[in-house]
Length: 159
Image (cartoon, rainbow, N blue to C red; front, side, top):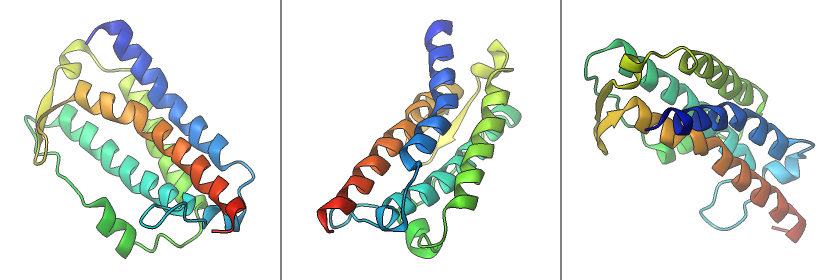
């Protein structure tokens, strides 16, 4: 990965906080709980997913940097959504997402070339490098911000 592309992804990663915050601005409980289609997540569920995902991602990155060829582990996001009470208020989950991401972005800003080249193994994806981690998470929050916006809009359709 070029330094330019890497820096663009770090910037996108950092800006993901603002994308989600903007997507949630002024949300009502009705909008947070609108299900855009059967089997699709509500905005509320997405925020809790973002917190769980971001905390998992933060640990994965730290393990990639600190440990030699770690198994970074997988988790079943659907089971988390079913068992971790995703119907609860979103404020603390949004803050968990925000602070995990801010702390991780600060870490990304300090990585050396040797640290960028570190890698481990993901049980579902095989070899898993720091750059691969960044490729995934640079867009993750942005994708979910768009999903939040779509879910909130569905509240206007009586669903």
